[in-house]
Each structure stands twice: as C-alpha cells, then as structure tokens.
Length: 70
Image 1 (cartoon, one colour):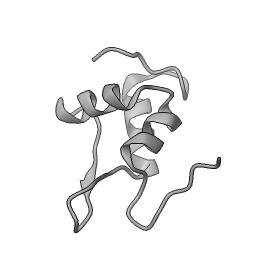
Image 2 (cartoon, rainbow, N blue to C red):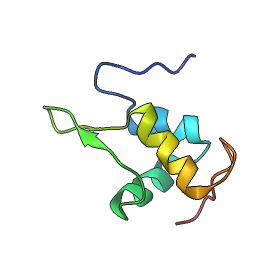
Image 3 (tube, rainbow, N blue to C red):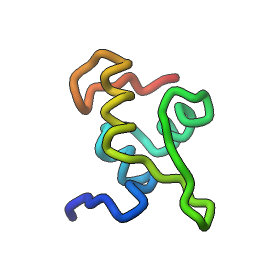
C-alpha cells in the first residue's frame, strides 16, 4: 500500500513508516519536541514531509536509519 500525504499531512503511523521507526518511537520524539508536528482542526496529530526531513537532517543520518530510542 502506498503512503500518501493527505491535505493535513501524514498521520503518525504513516510518518513512522516513512522514517522506519515504530509509531510509539515517533510519538515519544514528538512529546520530547524532537520533531515538528501540527494538529488538524479535529485535533489529530499530523506531520508534513518537511517536518520529517527536518528530523532526519537534525539526526544527521540517512533516511530510514534513525535511532530507535529517544
């Protein structure tokens, strides 16, 4: 199944898949302010591709090779 960005961005599961980490890891990074995110008008967490790329740049690692611990 292809991962597509909706009008509001990627949900946590899709964003985690793009980064190659578990959704729980991404959630932990979000709560530690290590990754940018926004909320939809309905309150759901979403990530843009730019926010995911910023995280990868900050970690200075190749895509899909982010550390699995916070």
